[in-house]
Image (cartoon, rainbow, N blue to C red; front, side, top):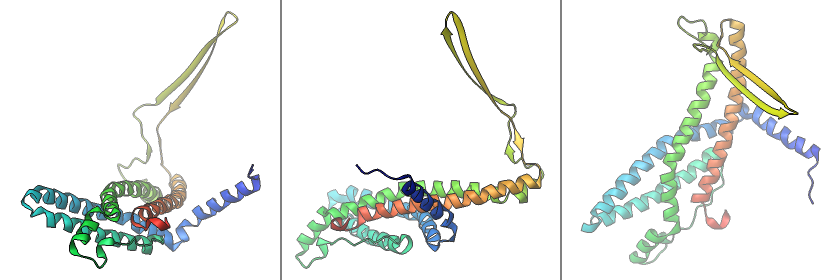
Length: 248
């Protein structure tokens, strides 16, 4: 039985904490952030290309004109996949070994076409490019949400006292939550009731605004750490789909 000592657990927590705190000072953090910002526009380009190309190719396949179009889409997908591998290497620092391509080997044209159409790498590339659109939406929403909150908190001293600005939690009336429990005990009914009330509050002083700005600094550090974690996951995802299977 392998029991983890409390000191080793504390050491791991300390390592994670130091990594989070160091996030704003690591150049890799901003390369990761750039990668996340590029995912959505690239995913949109890939999605439009695949939908247009495959739809046109399949629609015209009965006239044989669509066959070259489909082959072009599959071949171009390999080109896009190569670009994605290089992007992950340069921005994410992920070590991705390119797969071998049977359709590029020195053989007759029919065998090359068969290898392109039936190759595992072809469908891995197409599947990855198609999924990039969904992944890009998620990355865009994540980055937008996190840094909208961060900017709003950091800039609070600049706008909290502006006319018609209401900074804080503004409710028309308090929100009440009540939880109760009643249990019979020896002929009696014993009950417990807990009430919670949420009322409005606003930032009305410069000191309060500075306090929230300090919270924004913490939120910035945490947001960058979250982006680092998501970028790492996307790097592994890219290596899984676009790397050589034997070295995964």
